[in-house]
Length: 128
Image 1 (cartoon, helix red, strand yellow):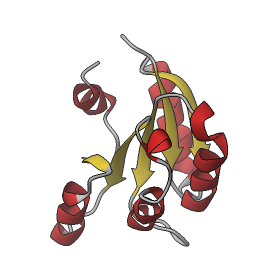
Image 2 (spheres, helix red, strand yellow; image 1 turned 90 degrees about the horizontal axis):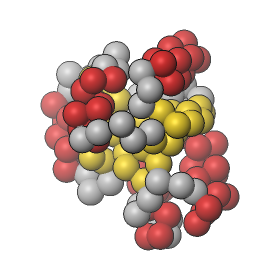
Image 3 (spheres, one colour; image 1 turned 180 degrees about the vertical axis):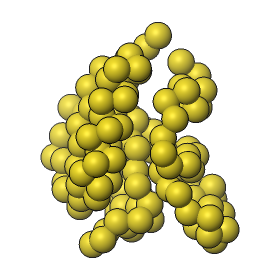
């Protein structure tokens, strides 16, 4: 199995803690970096720039300040060299069909995964 670098973005400290432990224990993650703010995560991604390794982002949809779609809007404006290294999966428990359709229509979101995150589903999506 290939280990991947993961950035978790969620305003829930509980979800960040649980998902980080789950991803590491499952053997899927090489490193897990957590952010409780989409804005902080975006600043980190831009500051790391070309030094950022191939990375999977697990992005919560519903967050205060900057939600997942607002993050995607900002992400769209960063360098192609950086974007090419990143795969984004949005996480949500939403049943709102507009959110689901918007996530699926986004060029930057690989898939919308249900919360709670199931590592086996993520592994299938990554084809590990």
